[in-house]
Image 1 (cartoon, rainbow, N blue to C red):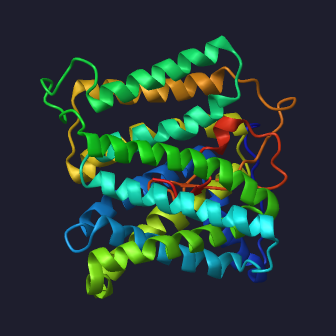
Image 2 (image 1 turned 60 degrees about the vertical axis):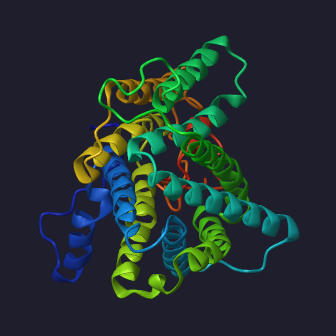
Length: 357
């Protein structure tokens, strides 16, 4: 990977004792890990967080799980980003809309996880930001990727004549399909609104404020659905774990990776998100998918890879730095883009802050 990613300068042969802690930090810190591996770790962390969240359903509701995830995530990010509350009217409105989209996306995601496998929920939701990235295209070639993604969703939903004969999950019922549709809409809106917020405030500050708004929106649902169960120490511990796994850790890993990774490479790796979700669902939740569902995931991943490959790299081979996908995304928290990241392709904006699934 020499020449592709930036590496820290080689330390001198003799390291003074005073600089040893700093050197150890440099060696053991995120910059010592190859960016693709950081991206993979971020995706795995997000999906493991979703798998842990599914265990919370035995003691609390999807609404309660969403409240715990966003509340803990907001507290951690607010402490780290320390955003100012002096916002203009337009900026405050954008933050509010961003938080509402985040809340809707996460509520729908965890409600869907109660009814469908993790890989199915993530893949259908993933079509939201994919369609956003293709919406402004006028090329006929990109229409093929939309059709391919639609075929994948149809296979996952059981709309094509395969049924459940392959031993996989049965066709989605109306409620499950509606919830997955809300995930896709919320994720797409999250990407668009996240960009607007990060342009005004910067990625970290905008994400922290947006997640705080989202937490306030979902808290009543959590209290009504779960009541005092939210105060159970074990439930609180799992909720904190979900927030760290699904928001804070993926956000940190992706931000570290994006400093040293071309935007196109980021987009290609991000396209593997549905496949990672399916593998985590199988490994941790024992959710076996049939060939129709696996083919559907392949179609959506292929459509995303096709959309990435059909776009020209921004600038003359420059390294765009979009902000990271997974802060509050149920699986991923999309990361809002930094104000200076004007060269990033629409596809790279899918995963803003890990607020997404």
